Length: 153
Image (tube, rainbow, N blue to C red; front, side, top):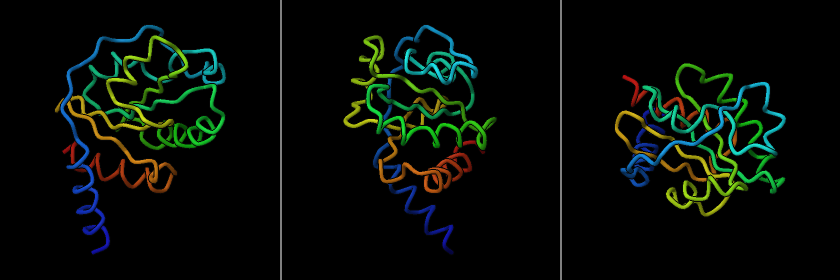
């Protein structure tokens, strides 16, 4: 009963935040897993945006600014959890908004605060904004599991 209730609430939440979008052009610079510690000096981390957009899997798009320590502190456990627990269900891409090349993406997605998380459905060409109150591992894990169950089947 609790799962059904949570699913209904999540569906209502997602139906209000899903927007259709046109595919922006890709980003340069492929960053390997070994370069995670050098994120401060990179424009992105994870799978390149343009590559993730052309995959069958949905992906978690994260906007964060490496100049804001708070943003990075909130982001670290989330990125690690997504990478470890959702590999094969989701790709992920972290865009560093400190870099000018990512400004257009942040404007397109109307990023108001950072970090900002979006689930990109590459098949339906839609995205869902995830509210900041869900930015902890437990809550985000639930959202990602429910979203995957509803969209991957």
